[in-house]
Amino acid sequence: MFEKIDLSKQIEKKEYNKIMKDIEIRLGQLQREAKDKGVPVIVVFEGWDASGKGRIINELILPLNPRYFSVFTMHEENEEEMRRPFLWRFWTKTPEKGDMAVFDRSWYRRIMDDAAEGIVKGEALETSYGEINSFERVLYEDGFIILKFFLHISREEQKKRQERMGKNPATAWRIRESDKRQNKKYEAYMQAMQRAIEETDTERSPWTIVECEDYRFGIIKTLMSFIEGMETGLARIDRQREIVANAQIIRNMRSQEPHETAGNGSSLKLNGIKSSVIDKVDLSLSMDKQEYEKRIAKLQCKMRLLGNELYRAKIPVVIVYEGWDAAGKGGNIKRLAASLDPRGYDVVPISSPNDTEKNHHYLWRFWKEMPKTGHIAIFDRSWYGRVLVERVEGYCSEAEWKRAYREINDMEEHIVNFGTVFLKYWIHIDREEQLKRFNQRAADPNKTWKISDEDWRNRYNWDSYKDAVDEMLFRTSTTFAPWTIVESNCKRYARVKVLEHTIDEIEKALQKR
Image 1 (cartoon, one colour):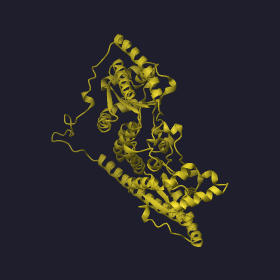
Image 2 (cartoon, rainbow, N blue to C red; image 1 turned 135 degrees about the horizontal axis):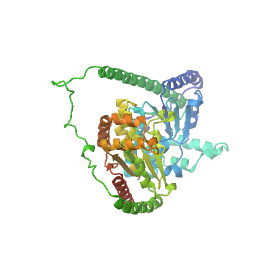
Image 3 (cartoon, rainbow, N blue to C red; image 1 turned 180 degrees about the horizontal axis):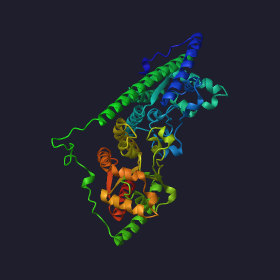
């Protein structure tokens, strides 16, 4: 790939100045258009050290409104970042709708620099290519524009620039040992970079390789490619939004048409044909108070010891609670966390997204809460809202919740690949038990705060939620992050089951470590 690139390309200063005037105007226009349409933009700059990334980024952002872009210089991971999945620090920097994030180095460090140095290799390296492609696909399908530039110079040119910078006291500090090492290992880096580009050059987010031995040529090519990429991306998003809008119009028209019925006048149904996972759950399982108190005390004692072991072994844990309203999630979480050191865990209650969260990809707010090594994050509801409440209540489009199954599975696999103990509990009760608990809450002045109009409305949509739950369990119970259904008509039984299962899975992880 690189050997076929003509690095002798140049552009004269007079022509450069003429072209730049038009480019600067167009850059400002495109930023305003993206802002008006609420389109988030990510621009990635990779390339050789001393290839001119800083200079080109500066030329890109000078004509732009500084309120609507951020520049992130991504050095090697610091200690805090190393204690989380490698995509965590990039997910948390994804821009709001209408804003732009410019990355001076990015997630490609892992499969370029770290691969060239042998830090990431074998299965970990092969997995990283897929994780990066998945990350970019998720953003692309959510309406992001992703533009990626690789700035290329020869080994000789790199060495010449490093020597020139080293002689100047104003720039000598910028030359690090890692920069010199890259020049010495130029061939190894080239192989890693070439494979990284080949594995991640997709139709969704293609690479643009920029010849940068002549600074003016490098700047012009980058900015013109940026303009072309923005124009193409904005047109693509316009088409997608038009398709979605038309599909919604058709659905609304169909919803107003009379439904076909069977010969006897009753609506056609699939009763007895559809298979339900949760219908097979034995909700008669129970535990008396004496046995419960005996077992829960022992389990909580064991959980406290395991919390300390997790911290020492630096193993992160993610526990997800989903379930019916009034199923007992809160009480279950309380018993699970009762004996843990409060400095080692966080309970993350998830409610409707606020305005800031709505302006990001729906997974953004959950990535922010992922625990570092040795810590536990307990999610009281989670990203599964996309395929439950958002699906049933129409808060997202059908295309959005349908693709969410893959997005969720990919995210969970990435977190598990990092070494996280990942547990998912569906806290299950039947419809009669839910009504009983709703009435108890409504009648108890100390518990009325637990019941809302929304809970009653959700109950009326029980069948729709049941269909959504069944499909969620089927599509997202994976080998690396399976669902555990917890029979919770008896709260005591449910609390013991969760504690026992959590302890078993943590012990397995500690034994492997």
